[in-house]
Image (tube, rainbow over all chains, first blue to last red; front, side, top):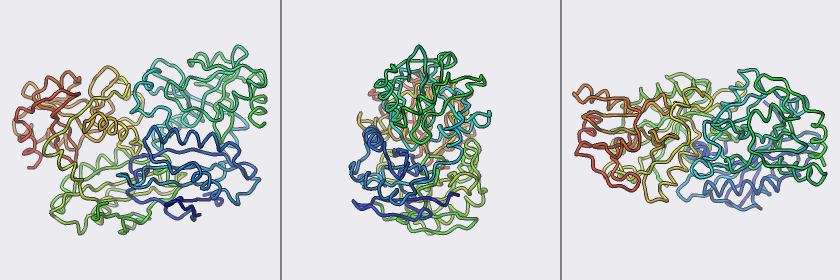
Length: 282
Length: 282
C-alpha cells in the first residue's frame, strides 16, 4: 500500500481531514450498496489542481443525471483543497471526489475526496504507450441518447463492468480497452476518451452516443484548434483507428497514452504524441 | 430513518457487530469507489433466514464472475447470524450481504452484512401488486452470453442503472420496471425476476440472456412442479406478458408481487397469485 494518501470528508457543510485507514461511509450508504453516486478524478501536479474547473462542471452534470443533491461547487473546492493541502509538489497525485446519495430518502448526500500518488504503472503507460483491445458493450451507438435510465454521460460509481473489461484486457496481455457499440462504432475507454489523428485532423466520437464528455480531450481540442490543428467530432469505427496516423486514450490522470497495439496489431503514432503532450502541458 | 437496524462486519476471520451509524468502509475501498463487489438480499422472517443457502450459492457465483476473493461460506453464515441475532420474530427484515474487492491489489476483501426492516411500501406491494413499465437495456438478448466483461449473471454493487430505471418508473407513475432486450425480449426487473402464467404453465426467461438466476423463482418452480403445475424457461416478449393469465415480479424480500398494470394497461391475475403465494410459503 502507498503510504502517501489523504482523505477529506464533507459533513453538514464542514470539511475535515480523515486518516486514510479510517472508515468514512456506513453500511447503509447508497454509494456503497448500489453504486449510486458519481465521481471525478482530478490530477494534482506541482501541488496544484490546474484542471479542477472542468471536473466540477462534469460532476454537477453527472449529479443532475442521477438526480443527486449537490452540496454546491464551493463545498467541492474546499474539500479538494483540504485533501491536497500539504501534498508534495514533486509527486503527481490522483484526487478522486465521490458524491453519493448518502442514506437516500431525502437524507444529505455523502461527499468526500481521496488522494493518492499516481501509480507507477500509470506513469509507465504515459511514457511508453499502451496495448488496447476493443470490447463491445452490445448497445447500438444511437441507443443511449433516448434511454436516460442508462445514465449515458454520467460518471457514476457503478464501474464494475469498466473494471471487468480492464481485467479482460489484462488477461489478453493488453493494458486497456476501447468500448464499441453493437455496430462496431467507437465509444470510449473504461476510464478514458478515444482520440485519433487522421486527414490532418484530431477526431473523437460524439457524446450523443452516451460516452462521457472528456475533460482532457476538450482541453486538447481547444488548444489544437488555437494552434492550427483542426479537430472534428466523428462517428468512427475500429477500422478508422487501424487506419489512423495515431491513436490515444486521454484521461486527466494519465494524460495522452498513445496506443502502440490495437487488437494485436502494432501501430505507430507518426511522431504526433510529442505535439499532443506539448499542447496538453501548456 | 428506521430505528431498527443491524450491521456486522467481517475482518481477518473475525465477525463483530457494529453500530448502524458507524462508518464501515474506507474511502479507498473498491466497493465504494468502483461498485466493484457483489451482494445478496436475504429475507429474515420469524427471526430466521430460511432461504439463506440459495443466496450463499449465488453470492459465490457472483464472486467468481468478478474474480473476487471469497472468505468462505462459513464466514458469510457467521456474519448473517451475527447481524440477525436478536432480530424480533414479528418483523420481516432485509439482510444484505456485501462482498467487495476491498483495497484491491491483493488486499483482503471487505465482507459485511446490514439488516433493516422491510419498508412499508414493499409490504404494500406484496399485498396489492405493482404497476410496471418496460424499459430496454438496448442489448440483444443473446449478446451477454458471449461478452463476459458485461458481468451477466453477477449480482454486482453497480446498480446505478437499476436505481435510475426505478426512478424513471416512479416518475411515470409506476412502481417498478421490466428490462427488455434490444429486440423486446424479456430480461428481468432491476431487483427481481419476471414470471408469467400462460398455457397452464409458469414461465421465466432464460439465464443465458445474462439475467440473474432468481432464488425465489427457482423455489417457486421446484414447488410448482412438485405440485403438478408445469414450468418452462421461455424466451418471452412484452406481448407475451400482455397475453399472459398473470405476471409477477419475484424477489427474496418482496416475494411474488403481481403486476396489476403493464405499460399503462390494466391486467388481471386470474386468481393465481394466491396459489403462487401458498407455494412460496410452504
